[in-house]
Length: 375
Ligand code: B12
Ligand code: SF4
Ligand code: SF4
Image 1 (cartoon, rainbow, N blue to C red):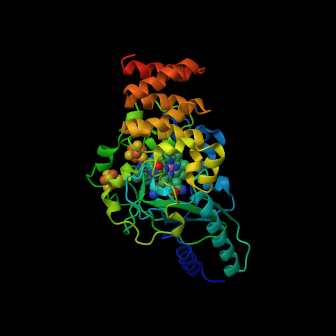
Image 2 (cartoon, protein in one colour):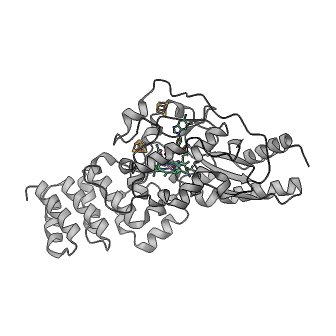
Image 3 (spheres, rainbow, N blue to C red):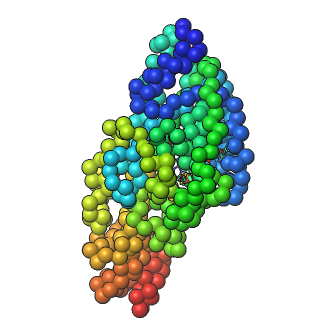
């Protein structure tokens, strides 16, 4: 069996081979920044993500050994996700290609299997990416991968910036930990704070999810608050503004994993045509894509908001289909969007919809859209 140091070097080399450009080891000690997380939850900044505040999740998030008592070290990994696609595509960079929640676990499993082979032992392991009750950014900082920027992203100084995703393997073997990242390379820069469309970035390197476009367009299952809709601009799924403006992202990783290459039709060339997606067609199109997380109704809700913000008359035809969608959420946001576009044709469609609409919430949106256009 190789020495712990040799084993660590080999493990990290293998992780690089599997596409994890960033790799480091940390201890399974409780995360020092947990009190920050707790006060974030107490302030309600997690918005509708109730799963984050559950007693069970809180207890485990503080202490990795509560998840795996045999854990002796944690391998923290980062994989670049910025495909070579022009920015401002309306869909966040990480969501243009295949879903990392599907791709990465296979690689984490392969890495664990490889470790067993090379040591000749059954080393206990548990792997996660995103969905585990772990404070991934702080663990990554502790494993030396980078610092936490003012936009709350984990940023790598090694030419990587922040366009990468995190994953980890809890290991039942002690490996020498890396030096935690202590420096703060944000300095006096405030570009992300100045550029965030909704001003949701908080001073403590966290944000208020209630106002974050990423939350509003992905995790939020209900309506988007009226006052925030115009601020969403062109973001149909997720948001990258606070990363696009970050000077550290001028130098992103040169080698991007083929799995994150943009899928066909993402982002769609013709937004208005998306309203014709039946539930089956939506599932087919977004099978294996992160976009499926918004579900059809969330995706079409967002699409309506983007068209409303664009105010182009070419959106009207698609929105007329959205106005008779089976989902009230889609109909209400389509009504809002038509109200934003305005003009004779939009008003006619809204009046006709008012005659047949049965849902009180949608009726309210139609009336308010008509009022904005002179009744
Ligand atoms: C909930 C969640 C969200 C929420 C809330 C985001 C937020 N900033 O809190 C929403 C839906 C808004 C979201 C959005 C996005 N997310 Co998200 N999200 C998560 C999730 C599941 C939990 C994050 C969390 O606990 N938030 C609560 C706050 C309090 O925790 P935190 O941000 O981790 O902050 C901790 C540290 O930063 C630390 N800290 C802060 N300041 C300091 C200072 C010092 C000195 C120290 C020591 C520590 C410290 O304290 C906090 C508590 O530990 C993680 C996965 C995970 N399990 O961790 C992914 C994760 C953070 N998301 C990720 C991504 C990619 C995104 C988006 C870019 C997607 C997009 N393009 O739309 C955006 C980015 C928005 C942003 N600027 O953060 C990646 C981030 C990768 C990276 N390089 O940082 C993660 C790690 C998922 C993954 N496995 O790759 N996300
Ligand atoms: S993801 Fe967008 S809305 Fe959220 S903090 Fe960053 S810039 Fe602001
Ligand atoms: S934009 Fe500036 S302040 Fe914000 S994370 Fe990047 S370097 Fe830090």
